[in-house]
Amino acid sequence: MERLNRKETNIILHSEEVSKYPELLIFMGQFRDKGIKKNDISSADEKSKEYISEFGGAILNNARHEYNFTNEVKSDRDDYQCQLCNQKNLKSLYLIENMKNESKFWVGSSCIKEFGFEKKTTDLVNVALEMKFNKEFPQYNKLLNIERHPIVIPNTLISRLKKTQELLKQGKKEFIKSKGKNMENCLINESKIENIKKEIQEYVEKNINNDWVVNTEVIEWYELLDKKTKLKRSIGKIIARLKEDGHFKSDELHPITEKNHRFKIREKFRRLSNSNEYNFILDDSNNMYVRSKVKRIVFDIDETALYALYADKIYSNEKFEIESELLKIIEINKSIDNLEKFFKECKGAYHIESFIVSDNKLFVDADENYLYELDLKKTLSVMKSTNSIISFRNSNKTSKKFKKDKFNDYVDSLNTYRSRIIINKQKGIKYGKA
Image (cartoon, rainbow, N blue to C red):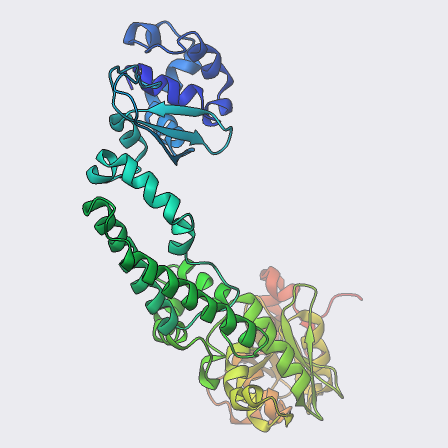
């Protein structure tokens, strides 16, 4: 900005926004109730000059947003003066108030538009009628408010409320247009809105403890998701239906990953499910894993797939046994300790020479002279159900196979091979001293 007029200067000086910039506050304080000219800015300290020249528009805009129209009007004279711009001989003044520091200004109709309050011309001209309406309907603004509730209100109720609120707004316009003669419609719609809001409150009280009522935070979570994400695109229709009805269906439980909803599903699953083979555990970061009861092997699990698998059971709140389908959605956790334990206890463990997680490699003894190099991830995917390395090794015809003395050369030249996790030492392989 190259200059600030008296009005703009006053708006900034009486805001909390300017307190963020101490140098600017001191500089502008010299021009209280004045404008700041281009030459004044040129002679300012460097920081103040930068604030005004580069960021003046943003600072002014932020300051404007601190103000609210109080709905107070003065209109019984024709010689008022605006406290922001000093314009004289005004017939009406409007009181604005800074919501952060309670600074107040009586301003004219031009200056009130500075703050974006968008008052209609008829409202500005008919100040007395506006005040009369506010006196007759002191709850007008409250009636137009749609309160936030902890659960989603079905769209049938919200639509009725919004439609009736629009009728009340129209009734106010008719009241002004008719010079205060038409009040009946406003009274009717006021009563309707109060009744609908009562219905909404009764709905909340009745459903707040319902397991499958939709929490408002689910909708808010969805609205904040990036539009480009696959998740947002995939659940759009579900969210639209939830807004309409306010209750989940069983097949809608698992796709929603909002943290509190997911926590509720998780706790229900853990309480209702039972397994002779597995336990479901949480780590310090609240991530869920599966652990075999006998061998204590840990598995990673896709929670969304898990809850999809048992959605009907969770929804009906009935206890159930974990079935064999669980193997389809779990994978052996690839932490070093867990893999060591798994490989040492599997069938044919003596064939396993070593593994490298970072390179996705598993080395298995083929015969006296050769080693197999297997794909670690692929091997684990098969072994989680068979628990045997022998059948996988024998059936995997595409495995890389090389002489053990050649493997010794790899070990000498590659750091990752030297740092591999040894399960069983194999004849023909060089090993360093323990």
